[in-house]
Length: 203
View 1 (cartoon, one colour):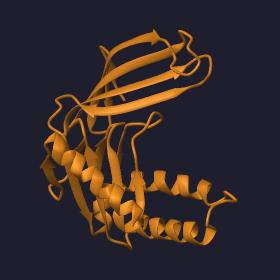
View 2 (tube, rainbow, N blue to C red):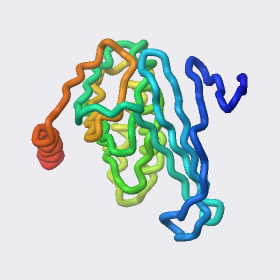
View 3 (cartoon, one colour):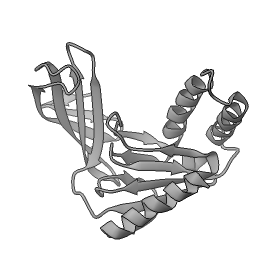
View 4 (cartoon, rainbow, N blue to C red):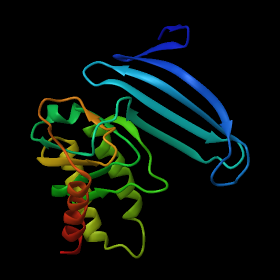
């Protein structure tokens, strides 16, 4: 790792600090949240803005990731059919909804939502970690939860094909693959996509 004029080589990209400051924490309302933004230049994807913050008083954390040049709202679909597809890099902003229909997983944006850069396998490991915790709850159907966990583990091991769908309302997400089907959406089309998945949940 080389550091020169706030430029840091990170893997295949270059990280440059844009600025840092201290702002009010949205949780404890004290001026204790240390916030910073970085510009991350990734081959094939382009420039990404990474933001991170941590409150020195209450420990609240926030992270986000978005491409520098936003586009229109869009829907991204990746068909994961081989173990190699698990290495596909994705940029998911905190406002993006991620759906894995064949695995019964729906990651919705919300106040505590985090943005990140990771691989599809990384997304699956995040899901696995959450499921392992949820399956211990008394009110949860353990049989159904453990079955879903097994399916996620099969996907991690490259034994199950599935789709990864990103609904990106701000057009700030990205994927590093030619396999992706990317469709720009008008606002009303985006709302219809959300309605479709909401109806799917009810059925």
